[in-house]
Length: 325
Ligand code: P6P
Image (cartoon, rainbow, N blue to C red; front, side):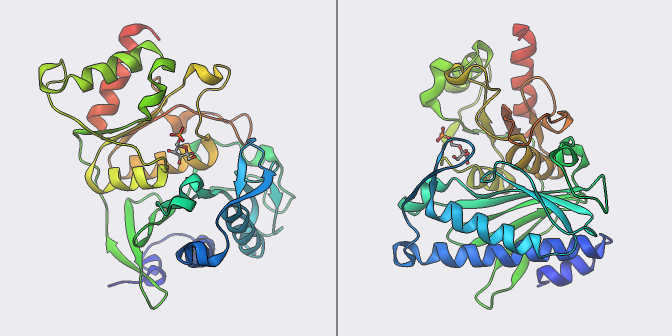
């Protein structure tokens, strides 16, 4: 089996991008080590602080963010980073040609209950090599990404990665190396498994309510097949399931915060996961169009997310088109 380093050697991607990916993979090994310690590693529980999102930070949110920030800002190929846990972007190496956005520990409300969480990352080319980065440099549509991936800290620690030529999966072995387990993953075009937080049903727009109502009618309904439901409250785990066996993941706009387009963030959740899912033959949508077409206006902006098996994403878009929403 190829390890990550050798697998990347077989690609024609820029050697400095390989070094950035190696840094992320190595840092996520450290994060995984802290998680594996569980309650013994004294990183359970929350800080007294809140992040820029106004969310109470878990101790491991802060630790994971610090590890990734330190490692990436000491990589000469990284021009700057942006994190869910940092209000502003942070400049790195003047010779760096890559910008990295990341959610250091997505789904961290699951840490204390020992359920899977993950690190999500997205890599963009810097538009101003040689000069100090600004937030404007990061505000590029998702189609500009040169790489994206996640590390899922589950029963196994799994790295899933695209550099624009399909999606490959790696498992972290006991020897501390990542070994390639799957190449060129393909998301099944059809599915009978949906993921959404049903407790928000009354807050969704009518087309989403109509779609889910039809899904719940199973074989007797207009969609004509029975669906199963999953909701892990950890986007990395949901998308990993979808990349592995298909499915549809939805976090749509809802009226609880009507002035915001959704809960999930575009730059370090929506875009990287869209890149992975589309590279694996799936589809991604805001319900009106491709997530990766959005021109970002600020680093922490949110986005409604519908992604997974192409047939289901397209069906949901039709529900919205027919309602004129
Ligand atoms: P809810 C985790 O907080 C997260 O950002 C995603 O990983 C996850 O899919 C979603 O939010 C869960 O949200 O409202 O169900 O807790």
